[in-house]
Image (tube, rainbow, N blue to C red; front, side, top):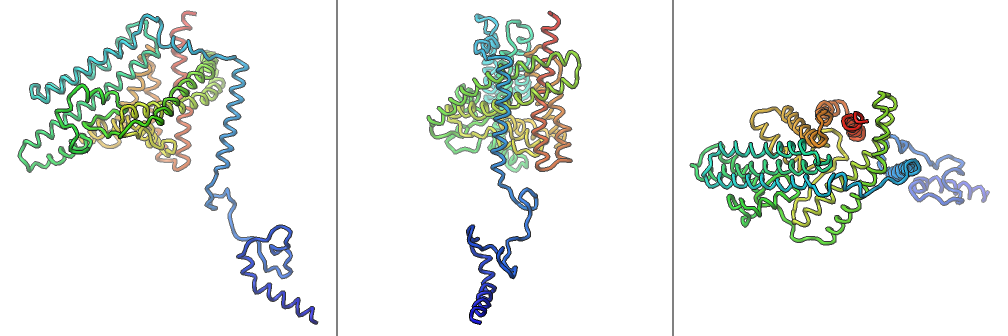
Length: 474
């Protein structure tokens, strides 16, 4: 009887402490706990819950899967790289890079073009000084500025098309410099015009409704820095203008934000990245992209569509990898080096474009200097003139398409409009993604357009250039 009483009492005590047992720590292996040995079935090891990979679970820590993706990406690309070495051998040739810029070591047409660009800079500064002094009317100054800006685009294009000794790569470099100068001088002219408007408002009688808005716009153009900053027209100096021309921005201000000092360690790291990644880019292009492009010419000639698609997909991987490396090299390493040397304070050269869930968000965040210029000097003026938002956005895309085509067709000396159509196609693509795709689907659509769209343009231009310059001679 005593044994039975002890058993009953023990069972009662176990039932009374069931809630504590469930809330306490799990028993160690071998302890006999966990409810599996409970004859009454009161101890539970199950509850209502979702599987981790179900969306309803709320689980979001996929770091291990991300690491797995990185490992698989490295292994797959390592196999491709090894296959490339076995098939083609080592194709990297640093000397060949020099020949891309120079046909004749005694002829430097691209560098001469860049030096001549200073003439247009001097003309723009001279016009602004005359306008500030009042010796030139606003209408005449606007017309002369327009002619100067038009010459900045037309003059180098004419030289590239007429001079046979200039190489396509050298021409791209020169035209890119001229395009940057065009955008900078456009901004320089606009901001100084806003400053003149503010000066006129200060001297005019108060009470005008537009004076407040004009003055606010001029203060924004001036950067809203402290009182010790440069004021108009004291900014019209060679020192001020050339600081702006070399600064990593396209939007002019009278007073730029400045960093307090040059961080030597930061600068050395960025310089090391510049040197390392530019060599990596050259090696990947010579070793990986060039053979793939060369092997793509025959399917294009034969119009073998299945082979063309296979070549396109094969080119997509190295092309996209090179584009990503170029983005980091230019927007992070190069621009930070220039900003650090010049103590330029605004280092927002890009935002989180990789999280883009729409095409519009991508174009607004991957190249902040260009986006700021378009917003300040093109988009907002169009809205002010009465254009709708959709028309203004379309105009921005078309202007960007023009400059893309300008930087490709003129150096190659052929006009196929592939780059223009590729940029123009972003307009319906942006509408489609924003209308029908959301969240991760929109982000995947942006990545697909980047991975697939660029190789299509590359193959089209290379094929046309090959047919135009080599096939006829053979």
